[in-house]
Image (cartoon, rainbow, N blue to C red; front, side, top):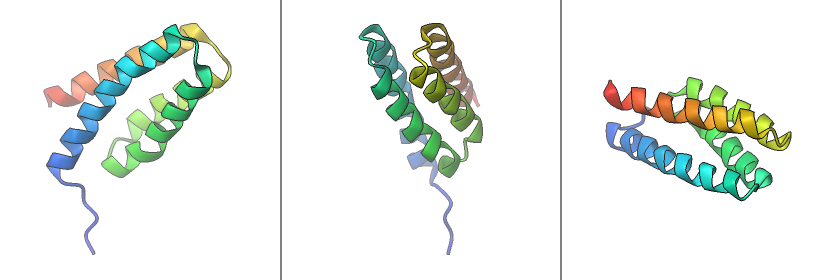
Length: 91
């Protein structure tokens, strides 16, 4: 059985993660740390399935920062995620 992910699904995945960046920033503005942690946990869980373990690492850092309510680290992790997503689209 072949479990490779199609290019179309990968494209949709990246687009959805880009939307998540905006959502995460809004959640941070509202100081909804638990929701940020949950969203980051979900991204961490599915990133490797789409062939993006690096994104999973960033999401894990974001999850921990949100659980610790470290706004500076949350902001940094969101920016790293955004930059990573942009770099993937340039490939």
